[in-house]
Image 1: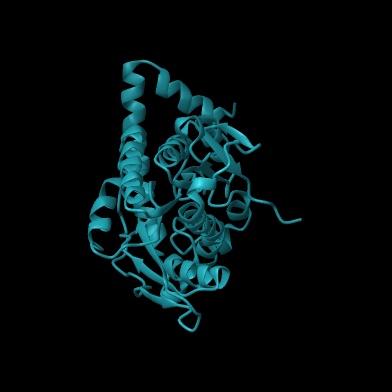
Image 2: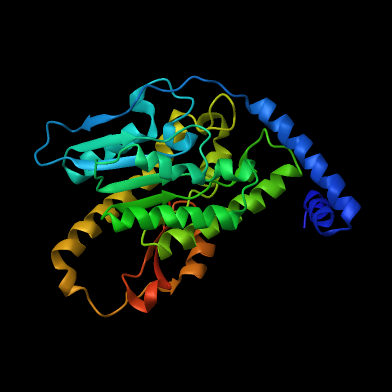
Length: 314
């Protein structure tokens, strides 16, 4: 174990005075990190609208909710935001027009998602895309509480016949403005939350996509390109790479939704080969960016999941 990690671990499990002192130190580190990251009231233009309007068929309705990563914080053009990129990508892949409505809010926590859904009451999306969790970590919301709240949101959407795709919490240990040993603690908490989110989402009937290190080594090795000016939020290129792992999951969810509706009575009674428990699948996904985890399709009372791993180039 690296020396810094040993120090953090010893402090976390040591005596009361040590824990108290270390907690105060972490608060100080967090304040410095917030100052280094900075905050601005600037928001990108709204991405709401119809994409692929020259394509045939009724529009696929997509609701985007969550936090700054879902908003596209730091971008200055509507078409550079994740919701717009989703609209463009889905229209191309599905060969159909896509209507996007984004209700994501910078600084939002999981507890804010219900209000975001309420804001489109009467508009019935075919699929909802959720990216949330970072602010739960930075505001010290219990991972258990956060995951339970997310599960409730997914169940609500699924009950309204809306497919759900969730990009789980990124690994905050890769954020440079967060100094050691706070970065170690942030990594542990964010990975724990991502694992719990995956379990909650899959058990509620949604599809979870691991963002892990925001696509792992790709972000770490190309930090100057993938991160924006604040070194915390992704750049336009970084957002594009995030969307690149969300589009296949949204596409699969939409096709599964259509297939299940048309052929519900023909679902095979045999479980797929690549099957593992939801908890084991969540643990694996938390270590591998781009991994999708989806419920087995009803077998075993929702305790089983299929893992779809992202293929690496080369």
